[in-house]
Length: 425
Image (cartoon, helix red, strand yellow):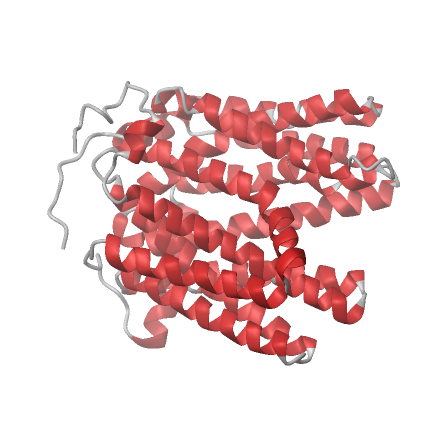
């Protein structure tokens, strides 16, 4: 690969990124599997509502997708380091296709809800290994062109944000248009296509590092990864910043509908920070990777500040601007995620990525619950957003006061230093 194209100090483009061999099909395969997850969630939620007419049961269906995602990412991490990630990805997509077949049969036979929930749980659980394997795969694709990897992280984040904003809505429309059975068949197709793409496109890479044997070795590997993550002077700070920032990121989305009330603008308010985040990703992607990383703490500190004005109950257009500005400042997550990945030892990436992902999922879920509780307790969702933002600002400020700037700078220099290509297995 041309090292000049990704050399530190030069801002690479998305055109440079898409010219990287095998990246585009890998990106599309991951997007397909993500859409498959959305279709499965919406389909089963629609079936549950049709059978029960219960909003609580329907919400429970969506909540079930959260728990296995956390468990799958945290408990299945060592699997990614024990087997070649190509095999893990293909097996995960194939296993999820089998889970969708089970869901299709259960929906067709009007099976009890417990069986539907169990199959959805398995589907989401397997996705934990797939997510970690895909992260390792993309990191290895740009092993010798680190600035391009930072651009790939930005594109993946944009894709995830767009899918979050549109995926559930379009998935619901698809199910309403063609019915749950056809929706699940489309879902099945997404996983099968993703498995075939990975099988054909991705090269085999050897498993790196030593692994413990048996169940005890598996558990010991997981414990070692948790210890290494907690003791690392930079990785621990990066994941801590990501976790505490979740409260400021989640609060406006969690309380958007109560803030909007009956005026029908709740969905717009929920989507506004996401739109802002997409714009922020585009803006920060135009900076050199070193400038991106130097902006992590300032942007994180600034992110909750606009939300403090929510307690004043400003008019809707002003509120939209406030939410958009906060979303825009969430762009610090892009260099944070890229540097975290590149600073992780290759032989530990599966476990560390899985643990970090589970911490992020747990922090996001806890933040949504905390914001909802504050809004309920104060009986004032506007004030709830402000309180959550103030707490978030205080936590980020406490981290910022003890931020290891020199260590982070040294880690960035090392992470984005050009490396010599090695022959793939």
